[in-house]
Length: 372
Image 1 (spheres, rainbow, N blue to C red):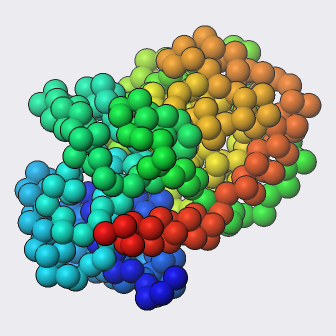
Image 2 (cartoon, rainbow, N blue to C red):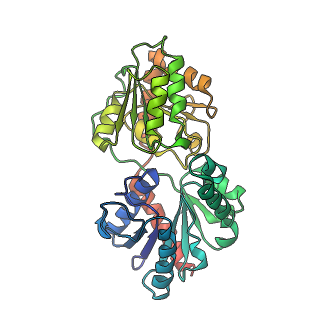
Image 3 (cartoon, helix red, strand yellow):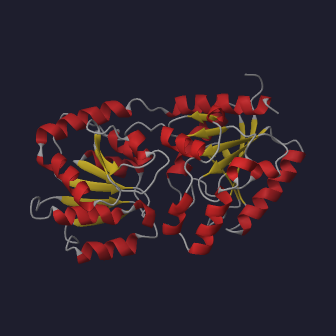
């Protein structure tokens, strides 16, 4: 590759945003690496209380340009002006919330980075006016992005794009990586009967399914501990669910924790549960595997790519409390199975590397740049 590309990234939240999630981790792990390799990377993100208007984060120049919804209008205006002034070679639009529709106004090629599209799921996450806006705007993607290449993080997400009308040959699948575990892990040591969830606490994540499944298993596994790791808008409701199910005495909500604390908790967990309705990939699944923890997850797009059913964990039908309970019980109650899955999960996690993901993104950026 010749000179390094100058890249403008459009992503509603940056790594420091209090509501950041897996998409933000993915973006910063990759573009932080590219910035350290000599790429010029600037990100336009929304503002939040206490966040500086401009900040260097992981060698990325982050500009916070206002709160939602004005943020999207300002991002469009700034992208239009900056690309016409020749300041950037490629625009990377992160398609994981409201589409920016950047191909309409960008004077430079747009690379669409699709973590996942919401579709009807949006109506279970946000108020109907916002959900309707997201749903209808996503309908415009096939037409407005017809000349843009796409990068997505799982085969399921690629299939979703094809079903929506994006040509398969314009889609590159590049899996997420994971950071090395911050704790020492021995996958041959049996874990206590702890069950955990890690991730954002949002309605579409359906953490209540895990709690309901554990209520079914309360008599069979009376000493099992439940740990809910993460923060989000659904926490208060979930705490109420735990009380109603009489699980509050054995359930711990940790809130936000550092990566080291997360790894320490997961390394002492028998099984992690991911009952989400839909994911782009399942980064928390692989992070759990990285400390040897198998996962029971929804048989849904993204998750069916990151979980190897019967090897690194199990897949269960969406919101099927009985099925989740049965699969969790298999791992809690069968020490031989548990150890086998711990080893398999740990080995599977070694397949994912952020440097490789950054290499793949660099190739996609170069193809986008030279396509102009």
